[in-house]
Amino acid sequence: MKYILLTSLLLPLFFTSCGRTNSRKNPVIQTAYNDTKLHVVREKALQLAKTGFNAGDGYAEVWIRDYNTFVNLAAEVNDKDILKENLRVFFRLQGKDGNIVDGFVPKNKAGVSEGGYNYIHTELEKKYAGHKNTVETDQETSLVQAVYKYVIKTGDTAFLQEKIGGKKVSERLELAMEFLLQKRYDKKHGLIWGATTADWGDVQPEHEWGVFLTEDTHYAIDIYDNAMFIIALTNMTELIPETTEKWKKIRDSIAENAMKYLWDEENEKFIPHIYLNGSPFPDDLNENEIYYHGGTAVAIRAGLLSEKQIEVSLQKMVDNMKRSGASTIGLTLYPPYPEGAFLNKGMYPYGYQNGGDWTWFGGRMVIALFENGFEKEAYEHMGPMLDRVIENNGFFEWYTLDNTPKGSASFKGSAGVLYDAVELFLDQSE
Image (cartoon, rainbow, N blue to C red; front, top):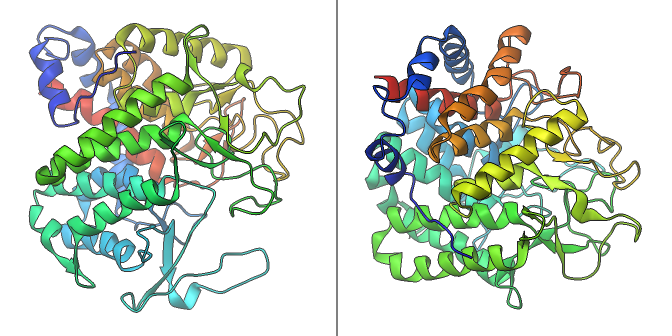
């Protein structure tokens, strides 16, 4: 299976040279520029970015998987030193084995409660405590991507040479990638693993909360974690060119194995999981009937799918959206896992990460479409996401099938991806 590996730096040049996003040749770009919704939502996103760096009004923490998706937005209204300090905190809290925490809070807010996080403290970080969801395998890749966006946005390449605890930032980035290879790599398949989750989610089915690996965990390989790894390794080769020979070889191997083992050629989709110690779900559940929207979107951004495969993937998402009654292609997955498949009560069918409608990933699919020349489709599917921001006067975390907003009312991850999507259209129209 052939795969495409284009860096984010080359993508705008590539598509402009092809004439696909040239506003003088593409009326979609001009239509988008004249659409007031894009400008209204852009301004709302900029105003939200001025309020801080926590994920949203329901979260006290600064989370790396969220921060990664609104760095570009935050850079428009914040001094780069503030952005950089947030990144430093993650490095100061980095484990000796290279692992990266999920998020951090001021130490005076880091209590330990029954069923809560066991907070992480290090000698390097005096103000903040961290915590880590061990079910996930995207913290390290999210940090690399966030640093990459920061450096590209600000031009602050000197940050890579800055020392934190005696190690350069560039060295700590490599250490984070080494953690995945040493602690989360399955040699048989040549891919990284995590706990079983619903697509890109951070909740495993075997526990009422589900954010920590336990003796009951079913380990699995999925497309989301590996696509995030591919993007991070691509970023590494640009941030630290002298490491290109090492990381390009690993990136190409991950990409090849992702398509070899996770892509279902017959059904033209990614399978949900490769299980390493059995499935947590009942035998009568045909899990491969479930289509993962979020992981597919990230895989497209990682350059794994051809133009034809992207076209088919989008059509499947649209069909799923219509069958479920969801309002956007941000539908997490379809069909959802059945009632009781997850012990976490929030993971009911079409709830939260089990079929909720998330702009946080729908927006990434819009970006992926635009980057691959599907500007018309990108504009079409961005529209409903913009509409509900305006209608609800906010960037909500997720939406039900009837488009009722749920979760945080100021979810910066949603604002960040929509901002990035809008900017693609507005930049090309200039």
